[in-house]
Length: 329
Image 1 (cartoon, helix red, strand yellow):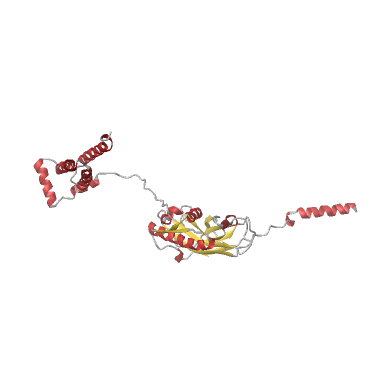
Image 2 (cartoon, rainbow, N blue to C red):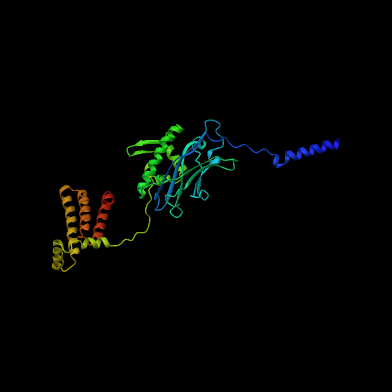
């Protein structure tokens, strides 16, 4: 009898300890509303040939909302037209209410890896298999109306910015939180809206600078080829005209390049302005302002030789330094 009892006890232990007898954890509560609500696709928004696939979604519970944040339980995928090949993946941004309720996100592709434009791609929202045995899933197939019909960078930035602002109007109601503020330049994101926007779509401030109070701009730091082509163009603009004939006469009269003759004339005019200002008002501020305009205008008309322009500019800078520092030392 003792051997029988021991055998039964061993059998029970083996059955309870076997993997087949383990009870699988139940799936989390399925969302009451689980949907892709709207999609806006733009291109050329940062660089020529790139693309941004933005979408608004809802992961809402009437009751029984999980304590695990939404970015753990769910994720988004952009699938190719075959529904199998994955092109991109992102997670909900757990900013408000652990990421539940309404929100927006996006897939960004550079020009080198951007999908075929206007293809019937699939935006998929699905439960993570780490937490779900039978994950909920919803698919949205893109149509031509989801794609921007605009081509320029500025147009697509405005289009996407307007889309984000309109989505945020809906989120303000859903979250009961202010995300927008009105300014003389239009509606922009407030600090809360900007924090969420930059978190859910990295680089959004560069993509849609006009919806932010502080706007990012890219400075062109590429090498530039500086050359005297414009100076030559300004000098040659009088060829074949009455003014050109007069200037040619000056060159023949003084036996030198007419541009040097006119440069001396401009220099004398600037000096006379300073003499007049000093004698009439005992001040040269007006002469300095007038002299700058004379030099600019004479340069555009080709009347100033580049070397003489440089000398006059240097003298003007030295005189300005004297007024600011030396005169009051």
